[in-house]
Length: 433
Image (cartoon, rainbow, N blue to C red; front, side, top):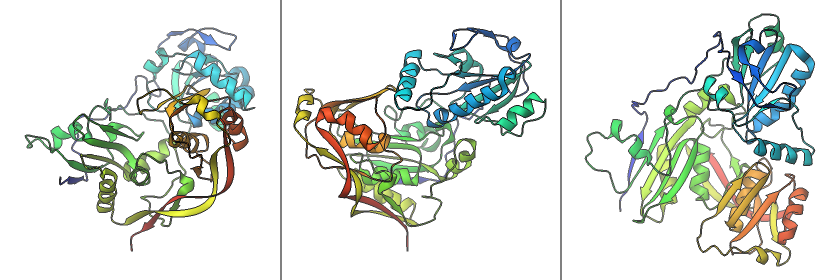
């Protein structure tokens, strides 16, 4: 069956994109009462009254947000340095149990545990200061919002306390449309503005567009198969490198950065060391949406061909290599005690901040968890040499993200990680000749 490939350089969107903002910088905040404040010598505060004699910084964060967790010690330092002139309050939509469990794990890892006042299960402040990315900081002084930012600096705090202007870029969050990649094909989403003259949908197609702002700045991908045997891959607002990792990993193998060689300085596959507002123009310029729907078993080969056609200046290939790797080994038969009796070939994965619960998984799934999460920033690829093919259940709790720390978790399952030479696949990316 032939597949129609559509390359769309721009999308005439009718959705529109609006700033998420109820209270702007310079606006007076309503004197709402905020209650259930924990780990503080005050359990409630009236927002406007509380800030008449001090600077209040609301630190919106989440346990899964690495930058948020990274900045918590800095916020503690600012609180200690400025004392009663400043009050930092951390705010999260997560439950108290989730956060407490996370800090318990941090303590076991000998990592930082924030003593700052905390608001859990927040809805009121989220509605007042809506945002879709964290960290998100709202600075309030004398009943007015003076700064909305993605970072807090000592220099900025000093300026506010002196009544001076803060030279900080205002953090801007945009609304995005409700879109579920699993339920709605990208083709259906943009069908109205693009294919209004079409009276029926194609049975087999692939399409690629530039960045679609209405889908938000956090990219992702999904894969489903319907009852008629059609497979669909949908990727939204991903850079080319991420699309290549999906196409060559075929959603069976996670290709970590440790297993990628980039032999070109082309910005399409370059890694930029920026985040937050500074990353927005880069994301907008270098991200793509891609979708393919087909019955063909060679769906990933078609995806690779599409990427090569759409971006001919970049070539990619998988090569066999032997490098120092983190190797998964089976040291005894204890893993058989954890074999799953679930007849469905689907894995369940849940990360609650303190434990990663893996149910009905394969060794490939475990390898993906290790390489994509535990050792995400490691310079060593993870390789499976267990030879174990059954599905099993495994829980990762109270772990340290080191080989030694993970071996303590894996030992009851008869598994071990060893750093040694091993064969694996590397993704090599070059500039086309």
